[in-house]
Image (cartoon, rainbow, N blue to C red; front, side, top):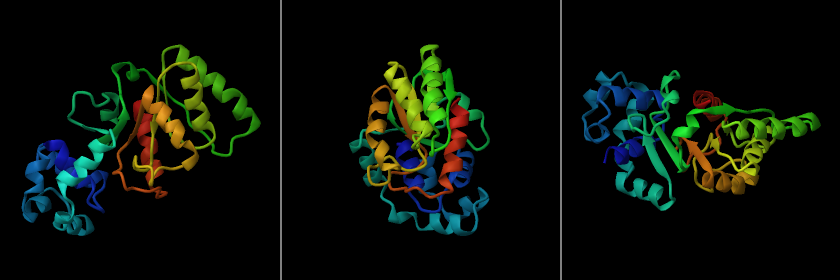
Length: 223
């Protein structure tokens, strides 16, 4: 029940990481209570301006309809209070309150190594990235990257080729329509079968440029 309303808040446009964090802290993770709360409580929680205006219009989002979309897509939701939420990720500044997961995050993924790099990969990058990723994967590390073109995609693929786990972190939603880059959609599917593809963004969220630095903090937090 809590997850349904957490997802609903995350589908309210202009409600971002910091606003979700304030709601979580003020309402002590009871998002159902928050969804039904009066405006004065959000003001007490420290929410102002455009975020407050957005929350006041949250009736445009139907919690049951939105959670059904998530379930129909085979996506799991983890809240920061969930026992399966990655422990290390809780210790970064402003950890994501919600994670959408296609695939499975396991305890073994606590031992993880982040590999990221340029989209315009050089011949040197093409040579060393798969070697580094493969050797780390075979040594027991889950390879974490951003599922971008170039270095990221090669790092993920090398882990998969070694028969080991990898996690892709998106700066978009998990729907086919919002996913970027398009050429890595099939790779994302393979990753979800032997690891996980995760994001903090709702299904409809496209590739706004400000999303990717936010995505990077999750990569670093998992690694």
